[in-house]
Each structure stands twice: as structure tokens, then as C-alpha cells.
Image 1 (cartoon, rainbow, N blue to C red):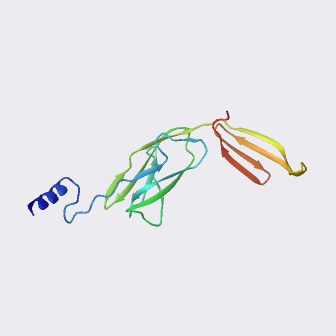
Image 2: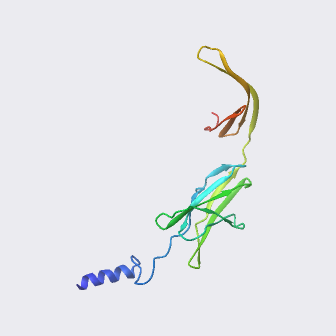
Image 3: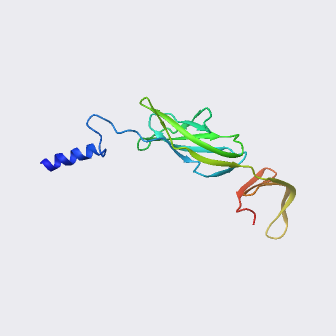
Amino acid sequence: MIPVIVCIGILVACGKAPPPGKQPEPGLPEINVPRTGQEYPAGVTITATGTVPDGAAAMVSVNGAAPITAVMADTPHEGQRQWTAELSDLAAGAHTITVTAEVAGEVLQSEPVPFRVVAVAAGLWDGAFVLYDRNGEVSVEGTMQVIYSQNWFRMRFDVNQITGTTDGWD
């Protein structure tokens, strides 16, 4: 019987289990997106995501600016709640995002996550298109516009649109 008591005492002393009557401390807020070093083209809206302990609100800050309140998921998962925040109008250059949450009067902060917004040279091409059926007959024709950059493109055909990415226009 003594070895069992000693083992329980060691677990409590080593932090493996909370002492009787004390709850374990909540996890720190986390940032899932953006990831460290991730790059975004200038002009896009970045949807940042992460988790905070259930019951806390997420406050997101970029470069130490005034925080914005994130949108919280309806239901928690394993004591954590998902959050999302829209980041827009970020200038080209290096940025750092952090998230804070208040839990039981204690303010917890995530590790800072650095990311970059890069200015990309974009182009625009206006033209016409013709689509042929299997018999070689014209089935549709009209005007089109292609907007492109180093790693993405958008093609507009009258009312339809195609968006995609490239590996650098090799």
C-alpha cells in the first residue's frame, strides 16, 4: 500500500496531475493560419484561424495594433474553441500575428507567428474567345479578360470566371 501512495504523491509533485481541488491550467491560444513564414499576395484578405480555451474570446492583433475580436465557433472541441478573423488591407512586408484570450481573469497570449505580404507584378489581358463543339462548329464566342500574377490567374468569360494557381509561369 505504501508504494501506491508514493506514486500518487510523485505524480502530483511532478505536475502530472493537479493537486486535489485545483483544476489544470487551460492551454494557450494557438494560431493555425497563417503559418510561420507563409506569404500572401498584396490585396488579398487573409482568413486567420486558431483555437482558444472554451469560454474565452479571441482577440487578434497584427503587428501589435489594436486587436480585433475574432468570430468564435458555435461548439467547443476537447476544451478548445475555433476562431477565425479576416485580415485585410495589409501593406507589403513582414507582419506578426498574435492572439490573446482571457480565462478566469488571466490573459493568455499565443506565440507570435511571422508572415509576409508580398507585392506582385500583375498583368491584364483583354481578348476574345471561341469554343467549338465536337464537330468543329462554333458553339460559344465572346469576350474574355485574364488577370494574372506570378502564381495565380483569373479568367473572366462574360459572366463565368475561372481562378487558379501556377508554379510561376514556367
